[in-house]
Image 1 (cartoon, rainbow, N blue to C red):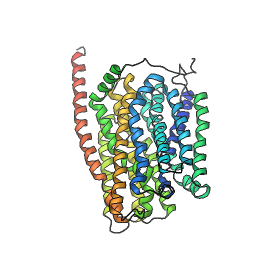
Image 2: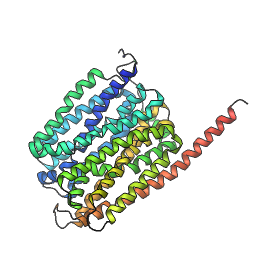
Image 3: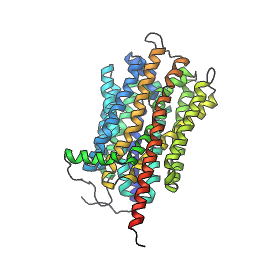
Length: 430
C-alpha cells in the first residue's frame, strides 16, 4: 500500500487519531469509577464482588500486554488498534445491557481486552512518525491527554447516569467507538511510507528469545518497576475506589467527589509535559525523578490517613494533585525501556513494562475490596471511614516492594551503562 507524504503535519494528524482512540479507551476503562455504588445496587453485590469487575478488567489488560506487543510488531498498529476499537465498542454496549453479575463480568473482560490494544499501538505510531528528539515529549503528551478520558468518565458520566439511567448512559458511551473505527480506517498509516506494516512471522522459539532478551536487560526491569511503583494509587482511585472513598470514607458530597477525581486527571495533564521536558533534558536522572515522586505520594497519603477524623477538603485536593503526578511518572519507565532495547523489540518491551503498574493496581483494587468487606459488618455497602483507612493502608506494602526494586535495578542498569561506555572508549581511536 502507498504511504503518505512524511510531513510533521501528517505525523500530528496520525497521532491525533491514535490519541482519540486511546482517550476513549481510558474513558471506558474508568467509566465504572463513578458507577461503583450504582453497580453494587444494580447487580446486588458486595465490595469484593464489585472489585472483581475492575480486577478482571486489569487481569486481562495486564495479561494482554505482551501478546499485544507481539501482535503490533507482527501486524502493525493500524490493524491492532482497529480491532481494539471494535472490541471496546461491543463490550461497552454489552455492559449497558447486562442485568446480571455474570453478564457484567463478561462485558468488563472484553473492555479490558480492547483497552489493552490501544496504548502500545499509539506508542509504536509515535516512534514511527516522529524524530527521536521528540519521542519523549509526544509519549508524555499521549499519556497525559489520554487521561481526558478519565475526566469524561467523572463529571459527565455522573450526570449521564443520574439523568439517562444505566443502559442509555453506557450505550451512548459505546456509540463513540463507531466513529473512531471509521477514523482509524481512513486516516491511520503505520508509517510515513506504508499504510499497513507487516513484520516477519515469529515462531514460538523466536518469541521466547525476544522476550527473554528484553527482560534480561536491567533497563527493562527498571522500567517495569518504575511503572509498578508510580501509577497504582491513581489508577485504583480513578477506576473504582476514589468515588466511594471520598463519599463514604471522607464524607464529601457526590459533586465534590467528582471534582476531586477531575482535579486528579488535571494534575496528570499538567505534570505530563513537564516530566517529558525533564526526561528529555536530564535522562540520567530518570530513576531519581521516580523515587522523588513516589516518596511525595507516600507522604501525602500518610497525612490523609493519619488525620484525626475526616481529612479537610484542602488536604484531599493536595492528595489528588500529588497522586495524579504518579500517572505521567509511570511513562518514564517506557523511555527507559526504549533506550535499553533495539527498535525491533520496542513494542514487546513496552508490553512487559506496561504490565507493572496494572499488576500493582490489580493487587490494590482486590486488597481494598477484601479489607472493606472484612471491616464492614454483613454484606452492607455502608463502608465506614475506619474501614477505608485500613483498606487504603494496604498501599504501603506495594510501595515498599516497588521502591526497593527500583533502587536495585537502577544500580544494575548503571553498571551496564558504565561497562558499555568503557568498552566504547577502549575501541575508540586514540
